[in-house]
Image (cartoon, rainbow, N blue to C red; front, side, top):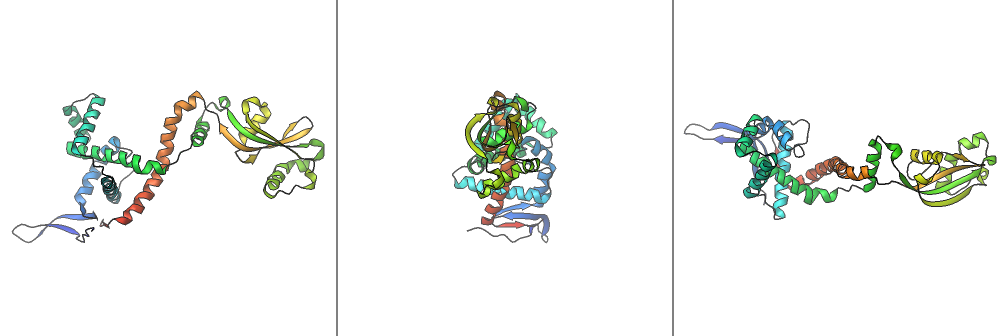
Length: 303
């Protein structure tokens, strides 16, 4: 059964009457967090963000933000414990040794570096535990909830690429064509919107009775004329291109599928793109997960 703690203050008793020692800033189940606890973290928040920016990922932290962070940390530890996962002191020591080896420093230099950042070794030890717990939490709980598709990575890569003309697309196309002589200038201007309506309703206007439809299927834009390629790149999937004049006909292409073909540059950038999209999407998913999970805990905020 969860313990409900209703106290608002911790009292320290000497031989004289009770003396106020510290204020209770919050409680999660049976874990009490004092105002001093929160203030000590706030004093070292810059160092914590530098060492564990993916854990302390807010731009600024108020005391209330720090309490929410501690609440979330408690929830993580509880969920990992229920899975039989406990990050022991031995595991933390192992992580710290790996860090020292990676940075090429000894214990003395590590402590000196921490002191320059206003962080004690004991605080760093617990921060390392928190980093490890957060990594396991992300891998076991959050990652399965985040879906990043290959196409999303390709779209982001294309959006940012400075060499758009060197990239290639693959399409699945349906060609809608009509003789030029069948349309006047006014009808040509509404041709695209007329085809959009036709696609939705299945009713073909009489003025488009000479319309011809050809299922082209899969094709690479490298195999298409430059004027058609330009129209296709400007259009999105599940939409019509603007009209293209070819010979004695106007052509509009319906793009059933549009995919950015992989390139060497894209393959090299995939991990970075995935990480960026994951961080962006997981942030909102993680916040919603904590808010929902917190309903299973007794939480008292007294800030």
